[in-house]
Image (cartoon, rainbow, N blue to C red; front, side, top):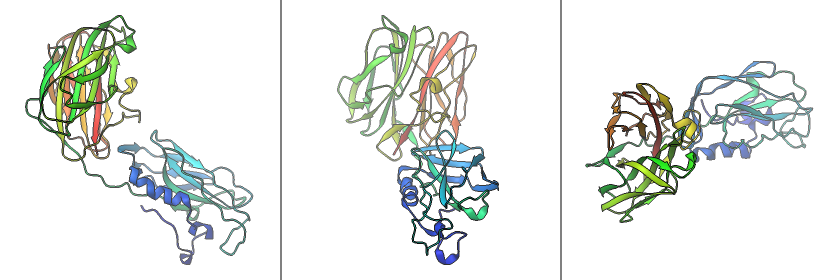
Amino acid sequence: MGFTIPNIESSPSYDGQSVPDATDWAAVAATDAGNGVITGLAVTSTGTLGLGISAGQYTIGPNVYTYAGGTGVVSTASATDRKDIVTINAAGSITVTAGAASGTLGWTRASTANAPVKPAIPSGGVLLAEIYVPGTAASISSGNIIDKRVTSTTRTEVTFTRQAGFPVTGTTTGAITIANVGDVMMVGVVTGVSGITPYQNYPCQMTDTSSRVTWDTAPVAMFPSPGGSESITIWKGVSASTGTTTVTPLWSGTATSPKVIVDEMKPSAGTIFSVGVGPTGLPSVNTVDTSKASAGTAVTFPSLLAPVNGGLYWGFLFGSAAMVAGSTSGFTYTLGSGSNNLLAENPGLTPGQTYAPTATMTSGFYLGAAAVIVAQ
């Protein structure tokens, strides 16, 4: 695998393949943002204008995606030569985009007409290959395909360590002592709420009495129960000073029997924390991908994908009956205030692996939310 611009002296199949353009440099520059290929995703000809794309892994930003393999099709040739590109996005969709045709059929370096030019990489796409489409051609072969896969930039894998004395459980608030500046602070809140609609029944703001934490302005993950009588949310912040403080959710309605659990996690590297994605590429704040409501004794935390530099899985469940910790490898479980809410955390995720820890409960329904926290 390797990004290639053929030298004209090496006699490429077509002179135009040796002409670099802005699309080439954009693909190289995109690695600074985390876009690139880890393994596989080679593009080959399958006859006529068909393409085959092999299985592999790639990154977009901090997140790793797995592609099972598939196909693409080059559009009908133009009257003159053209350079198309093959890209893949976070959803695993392969796109073949046609470029601007040359000013003459059979363009060579001796031609006075404009050379064929590749199109820009579609937003959110990773460049895989360039396809040289000669004017009026009915098929392409291996000589028409130039590898444009740029290797994904290696990133330091980040793990997290829980500070002593955490997690702290409480009811309406959580009294804590912050150990270190620059740690990620996680808060799970579950409550019954009255007087507001189901999709508003969560804290509208997270605060702490001594202002020692810089909190996000919205939860990183949430899920209201189908009937709207309970909600569960996860909030994230970064410690700005050490010492005692009391984490205090602020409500947009009247909270009923709230329960709070607070955690402090120190990263092995990095100071900027962001949220990873679910298996389908949607952010973990998305309730469809990160929350569950079901009945029965087996419970499963939301399924989330570990990004390219690892991260922290932090999930919180609430049930209508007693919860029992599970035994999923790599996870630590903590019962919150009362026996019907449960925290599961894994501080050292393996990049590219999907995580969905399990637990049990005696009966009834449960709901939950989870987030993967990335440090950069």
